[in-house]
Length: 118
Image (cartoon, rainbow, N blue to C red; front, side, top):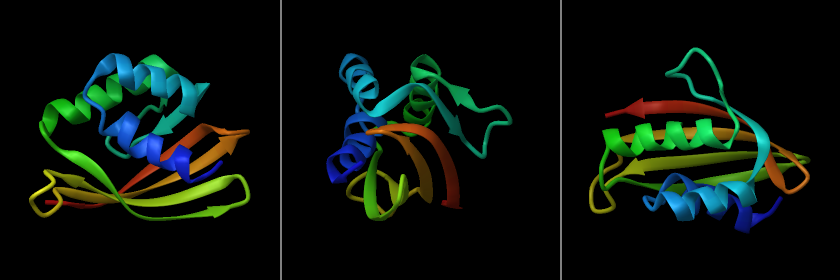
């Protein structure tokens, strides 16, 4: 659990539009049976394929948008990450926070919180 993993999570997974590159990084960053809780969906997304589905959904809704890390902090085996999402030259469309629990060096569970939808 370190800065490089957080940056890969945000930039090489959630902002990556090349599906093959994204999938390779997901394999590196997320536990195989990871659980992702998104407030816009009732059921969690489990596993790498379902995570790919969630990211595809987000990217299809907001083409040309990227995630930006605003701040983060580590606490034992957890990370709290504040982020923004939108086109790089504009104000963010969305801001929020991820709370991630790690198993070793991989994200096992992630809770997504959305602060603002523009």
